[in-house]
Length: 92
Image (cartoon, rainbow, N blue to C red; front, side, top):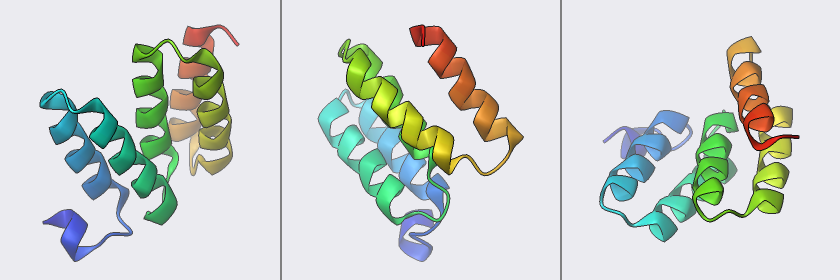
């Protein structure tokens, strides 16, 4: 309901994407997170979710590109630290 009530709230996109991940519908989850990154007011966590899904496909180049976008979209120190953690994890 959060997504319907306020599509600008990133949490709705994250919740719906996670539901599809738990159903092993990774392509659909990626589409949902990507849509959230386009529509939500805050985008960095949707971008982080996209990057995480790319890591499951071993698509490191795409993951780096998405994390670079997430870094630009980080709204606070916590989000910036999450992005930095992921960048360090993949070795950039």
